[in-house]
Each structure stands twice: as structure tokens, then as C-alpha cells.
Length: 255
Image (tube, rainbow, N blue to C red; front, top):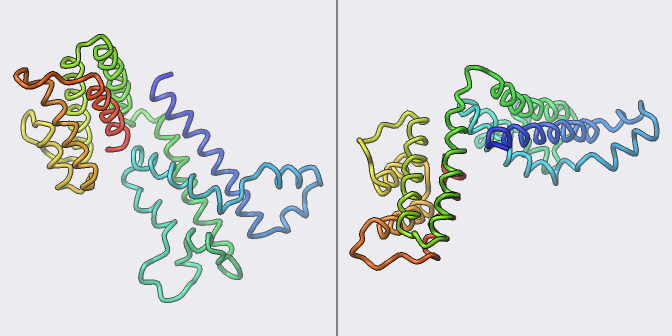
């Protein structure tokens, strides 16, 4: 299964989970809904539907990652439906949020607001599924991710057979290629053929990564440089294993 197929399968599962959460929320807000169904259906609902408060946070975290990749221009909308307004002076239908619902504020006039704003979040996630099918969707990133994964497997094999410098150099090329893609997607210009450290500085300056990730990339860059400079001591298999794992982590978390 390719990365594209995996992403699509995960998205389908996440949408299904969102549909279940919407039903849960609707029942929590209006328990009389179950008065209209038979006992068997009531039992299924109680046993199969996830509790909204315990299941929503993981759903939100996963959905937010997908929105950032496929609908980056709608990220702020998705977050806004979740977070309560910072300068809100009073709670009303128009400024209600999922955060309010999670702490138990779902009575009176704002009951319907909860289901409405969650349905908006869910609709944004469903729009991502349509994006997969759209001929306008640029799948370059997802296809490139397949290439990176394959190249990392080659690096692992090279290291296993004792070609530590070659494995490390390949990891560096993968890292540079990923950073170039990240910055291109964001419309950020770079100099011609930047080094890992130059990419790292730019990612930090553009607030794409925090200081912890910046230092981790510095460490990976140092390991890569150790592979490129033959006068230095030979890199160890353990060091290159760490480099491979580090690159794998970065290309899946920095985008």
C-alpha cells in the first residue's frame, strides 16, 4: 500500500469516527432522540458510540494534521470552531465553541450551537476526502513521501552492510529534499542548493519549527557532515541508525 492509499484509508476511518461523534453529541444534547427508536437500536447506540468528551480530543488532533496538509487555508477555521474566543465577555450562541461543550456548557440556547459547530469541523474533514478525488489536488507531496520512504529503506540496508558513510549521505539528501518541499509549499524562497543548516535556520526564522526541533535537526546535520568528511572518525552503525530514525521522524512531523 502506498502512502497515498494509507492516507486515504486513515481519512475514511477518521470521517467515520467523526460521524459517530456527531451522533453521540446529538444524543447527549437531546436524549429524547432515542425515544423514537427500538430497544435494540438504543442498546447499540449505548454500547458502540464513543463518549464525546473522551474521544473528541484524539479525533481533533488527527483531523487537524490532515486539514493542515490538504486544506491549509482552512486550518484557522477548524481551530476556531474548537477554541473559545479569547476576548469573549459572555457566552452566547454565536461565540460558543467545542471547548465550552467539553467542560459541560451545553444547556439552553447553546445546545444546538454545539452540534452545528462540530458538523462544520466534520464537513471540513469530509472536504479533504473530496480533495483526494479532485484533479486539482497536487499529489506531488504524497508521491514524494513514497520516494523518501523507499530511500530510507535503502539507507538502512547500506548501513546494515557496513556502508555507513553512504547511508548517512543518502539521509542528508532526503532531509534536504524534504525541507525544499516544505518551503516550496509555503511559498518561501531559498538560495540555490542550501545546506541542512541553512534550511534549518530558515525553518526556525519562519516559525515552522521550534527550538527543540531546530536543535534536533542540527544534531542530524552534524551526523550527516561526519559522513561527508572522510578525514574525521568513521561514523558508527548506531549513529547512522539514529540518523535514519531522526530523518524519518522529521519528514513525518515537519510540513
